[in-house]
Amino acid sequence: MGGSVSQSSLRQSPASFRKRLAGAVHASRTAITSREALRGFLVSAVAGVFLALIGAFGSGEGPIIVRLAYWVGLCLAGTVVGTIVSQLIGREGRADERPWLYGSLTVVGVTLPFTVVVWLVSELAFHGAPRLAALPVYLGPVFIVTAAMTGLNFLVQRRPPETHAAPAGAPAPRFLDRLPPRLRGAELFAVEAEDHYLRLHTSRGQDLILMRLSDAIAELEGIEGAQTHRSWWVARAAVEDAKRGDGRATLTLKGSVEAPVSRAYAKALREAGWF
Image (cartoon, rainbow, N blue to C red; front, top):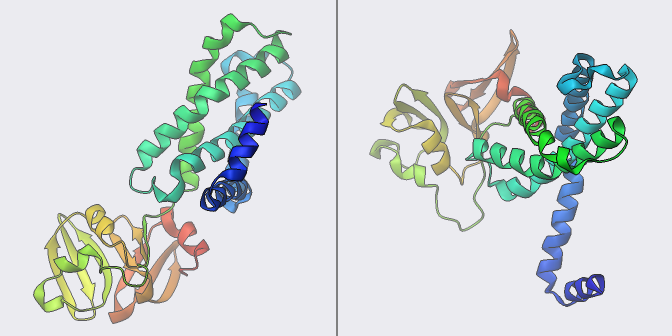
């Protein structure tokens, strides 16, 4: 009965709702099979092998084959749950400006339901039948492992803060109003942090303004670009060339400006086609 009501309600819902629902389902499936997710599965599998080898949380008494199946299986299952939860929490780019809040919500969102899964699997594997009184015992270990895996995947899959081109007819980015009078109307190539100031690289020269880089990036939304280094934001249209050496990359911009690319952001920028 409940199922028929749900199907009826879905058939009668507006087309826009059904489209958003279908999009959400597709996004979740795509997220699990994306390159970033596959990298996360690899990290989880390696972590599972490590936990099995050290006999984490008292599992060392079991045979190594059982431990490997147990830990690798749980870590991979946790990655699937974590990917779905993180997609639900961070869809539409809401997590970009608050990654630590996003990570915390992901840990909580995974820990609560996955504790039940771990309890059920562990009790069946090591005790023969689930003991309801033992359920709270699993909460702490699951939280610890989930937090560690979330942090590890965050570092491995770290992406630079990005800004996006504005749609047609949208107002100019707020940051352009901060340009000194002599730079107004110039093409902005890059923004470089220098102590408490920002050096503006433009087609009309350079100047300094007092502002934090993180605040500037928030106001640069409307220009396609990305933070390439902890001290640099670069407009994508300004990139003319790129060179690599000693494990580092450098972007050559219009006006002969050279912007560094940090190791933390190099992989993501390379995959996005920046160089």
